[in-house]
Length: 277
Image 1 (cartoon, rainbow, N blue to C red):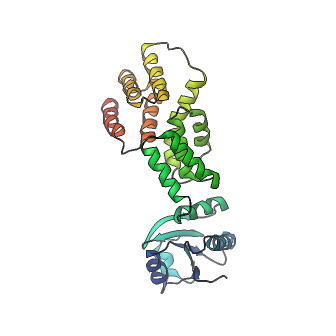
Image 2 (cartoon, rainbow, N blue to C red):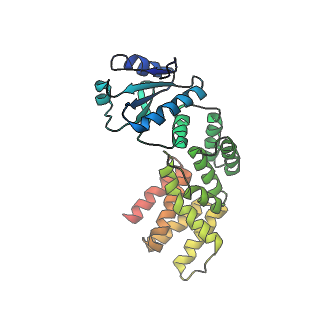
Image 3 (cartoon, one colour):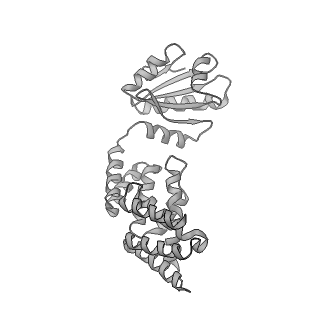
């Protein structure tokens, strides 16, 4: 069993010092394992490999659950392997059970800042400013280095939707990896699907409400989101369940595209609530 300054075995008596205190300056990834647990036999070497690859980016601390009942109880370990990442004395991320190597690697990337961290922050900032093309370029730069990077994939999908490139955005969202960003991607999916379908085969309106709805979709493609939201809410005032709830899903997708703190989201969310409830 490998033991270095970055890979250590910890126990009930020294955990607070070697994990909690140490995590004030560097992340600590804690693996709860047991000799009799088959998945632990493959997970432990892989975590050690990632620790070596990161060259001091984090410490790996291993806890044998059979020998350390206090820690096992303290952190509610009911299934192993269990992995928890600590920073500044607190758990910042965790997973339980069998994961693929790619999922484990991505978990470590989320915990330990890498060379792409600054690029991701830049892409996020550009997205917030609705500089769609620049956000796209920056997120693609990240994905060139790390093809599976959920945060960059989400930024790319949003930047494509902001440029009326719904077909490519839809493909990204349909194949989105399991991650903390998955639920955000899920909220964008109806918007991407609707715009992709609309762009592929525009249908002639059969009613005045259809005409308002289709115009709203065209306005989204033109980047005029406030006018599009006005149109969509007008549709919902007439028919709350328009197209089996599709109009409502498009509105919620636009909120997800803009973000919760965006002034348009805050303004139109309260108006949506007044219409629906």
